[in-house]
Length: 206
Image 1 (cartoon, rainbow, N blue to C red):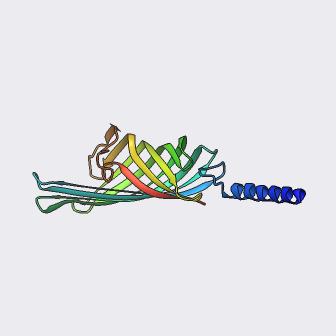
Image 2: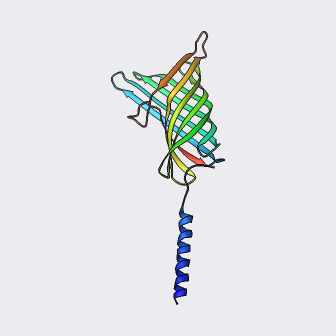
Image 3: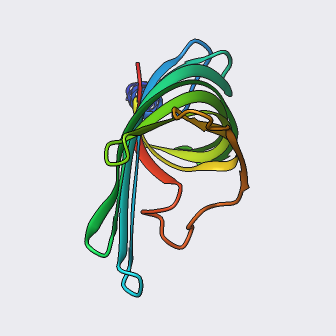
């Protein structure tokens, strides 16, 4: 009887251990992983004193490949729009597109599901203002900060601050126009996470 109870206890412990192992989940990345991520950013301003309004929207899907568990490289495409109104009259109605490449490094885990990263990117973007009939072309580079929250092992939510550190050179397609360079350092409108340079998205491990 004692042997029977002992064997039953061993079997129960073995099953419990196996079940516990099956329930353990790993969140994050390993070498060779591929991910698809879509970042979305939007913002708006309304100055009642000057009666100026503006709104912006951008979406930028990315495809990345992990060279190691911490380092990924990849490419992105983007679409954006910007509208501005002064005293009830449209002054800017612009749409644009872009392409680029990036390198992303994960440097800190905040628990099992939160992964923080920094990302360096370079790219080319073109935007046309329909009202002024002018196109501006920009070459730039920027450093972003972001965090992934893994909802499942394959799906993560993304929040990022774009162009915390950035450089760009923009030129209009008009005769005699000269390129204008811009350098920025900062976190944008952090008080308003839905504006400034904040971006939200979702990531899928393929």
